[in-house]
Image 1 (cartoon, rainbow, N blue to C red):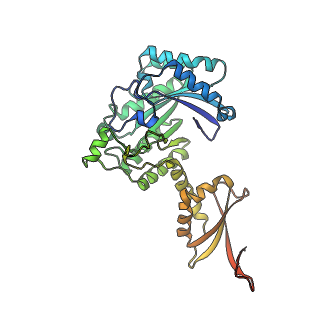
Image 2 (spheres, rainbow, N blue to C red):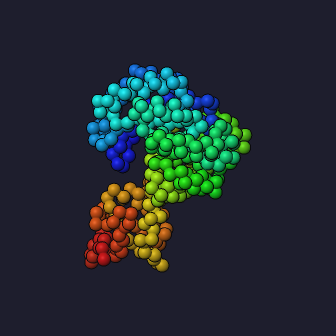
Image 3 (cartoon, rainbow, N blue to C red):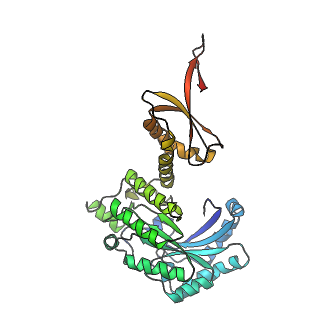
Length: 360
């Protein structure tokens, strides 16, 4: 389950490869979701929802949603689609859940399908867009074009669905410039949300074969963090929240030898958020020409972002300021997204070798 900052709970039901017309060159949904590539039963759906209801996070959530992920929902046979939605319907009618969301391709939507989904309480449709560059889409064997995406978003908005767009920087043919253009085109589509999944090379995929043959180079972790941080900033500056950054960690995906290359990190989203925060607070740092000691004060919830992963943020701020950061303390009087800095003088008391810190 996942909970957004707004207290919105999403309970995922994974349907790997179900409804997919073919397998994209990077895809191993069974490994990513830790679910077998076979149809889900109504019993499994009920078990998943009933288990979610018993969790602590469920009771504290303000809104709750069921999500069908991992396949191409709108391309399922109508009877299968209807069965899944009907299984969830009682939970909507009694108020246990508020709505349903599904993920699908942008080239398989039609009015009949949308009317069916709308009638069963589907409110959000996430499109596996991946790129708005047609060459990247061809090289990745996505089987759809950027025009398909534009048409799909327009049709979904016509039926008053909330629209999410999933993007994958680092696909074959992609680079910093083409991905920047993809983000620009997405901004023009004005979806309600976005996800960023930098491409990783998973064993058993066609992309793995290309990588092993030397025909594909994966993004480094630093490159992916930079690209995703820029995309995240641009999207959210334009009112499009980024609700997920990086693949979730599953036991099957993290087995030895499963990921061959690419910017995999089990805290990738945190790396990106910390990178963005570091840029925001850098202007508040003094610049010292000789080594100095400073303390930083920040809102309590932002201290992990200041520190960064394994204190990498602290080392970065020390490099920028030319100082030693010897304390980071919570201070709710400091405005969010900023820091306060105190220069600290080291004072040695007579006859005492212990160093006492004194804030000035």
